[in-house]
Figure 1 (cartoon, rainbow, N blue to C red):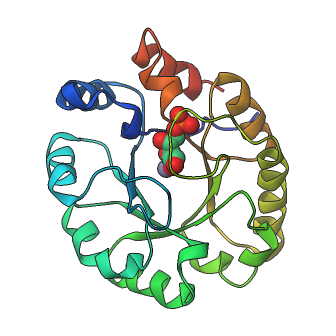
Figure 2: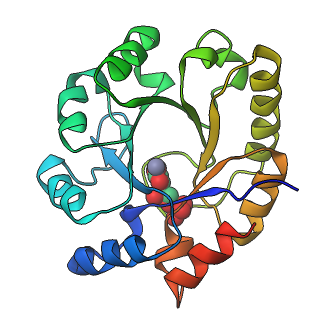
Length: 218
Ligand code: DX5
Ligand code: ZN
């Protein structure tokens, strides 16, 4: 019997015209974290929101912020992310030639360091960083947009990552992001995922609170 997954609704799929309402829904729900997708139009082919908007999100949210930076040179923004009161700062493996240094800097700033891997990045490349991170985020779509189709191979990557964590004695959590719904989520949890990010599955559901509860029960 696996323990309940951590659920992190992604506000990228919220209704920005009613952002406060949607954040309050997450506050009242069973979700553990709020997932925040920052994009720069360089690392990914889209731009989402920046710090002036996130300041408002951070003030309204009562749940820990899981900040996913889909940007080049994320180390430039450690101070800004910390100022939001973020719990986890997720940087992409592909965006950090000096990943070990960035991970140390995030920890020194008082946040939990997380590393994200794109669909084409093999789990094996995490061998030398896995003991230093709080969490690994496996992208199960190509980052940049909500509402994309789940990439099947991600389930196998979660299994490989679980094996790497067990073999190395790392305490890293496994989070998965992209195309997560009740069906894919169940298989990801079975493969060893600890945390599920869900954007459209939650915010496009007729009853988002009930959907969060359903994902939580996987
Ligand atoms: C994609 C983002 C995701 C996105 C997921 O670039 O990192 O967090 O919000 O959206 P869904 O759950 O709709 O695939
Ligand atoms: Zn994300």
